[in-house]
Image 1 (cartoon, rainbow, N blue to C red):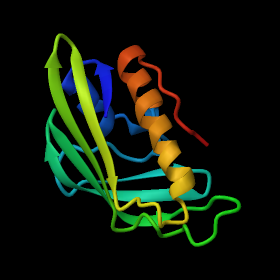
Image 2 (image 1 turned 180 degrees about the vertical axis):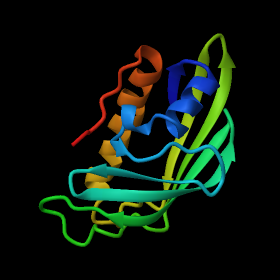
Image 3 (image 1 turned 90 degrees about the vertical axis):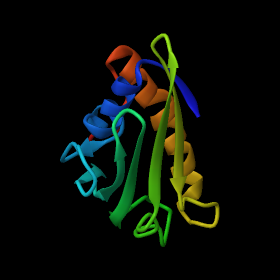
Image 4 (image 1 turned 60 degrees about the vertical axis):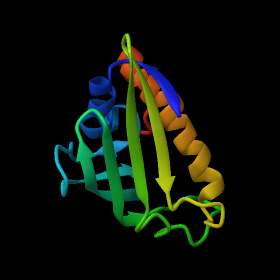
Length: 142
């Protein structure tokens, strides 16, 4: 959960339209259930399909393809496949939004957990928050 100084519309647009501004290289924005996009870092990529899309309230990305490469980590390439990244927004009024984030399926038993969990923490609580509040995020672009 992160508190963001911005409207639910601003936060939702960042998650659906501007992923490349706070996370990584992204090939597409999304606007409905069934839309797909891919985000990549160097030779790593994840492809997502939108399984839920409620404007300014909730969006869920299902990982449908993954090629996760990270030096020193074996067996992580396909770990995200079948997992769900869930974003739920609460309007707190006065230009404030509570963002509830969960990567369902990213569990401690996965080989990538020790790098993926803190990376999400950074990208959501720092980069996404900064992008909504200041217009400048801290994506990993390659």
